[in-house]
Length: 48
Image 1 (tube, rainbow, N blue to C red):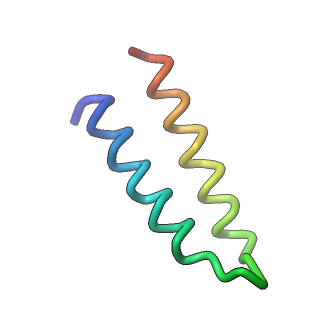
Image 2: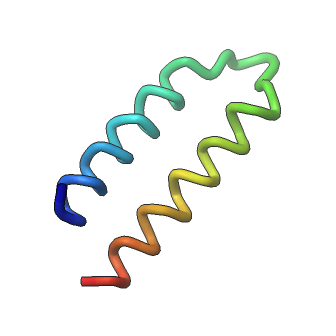
């Protein structure tokens, strides 16, 4: 899987997490995973 494919997969996962966030209480695990995904996306973008 190349970097572009990885980025697309991570963005899809991030979008899914954002859609699952309840408006009133966000679990810390979800926020942490979102930050990890965003970090991975940036890292992959900088590799190209």
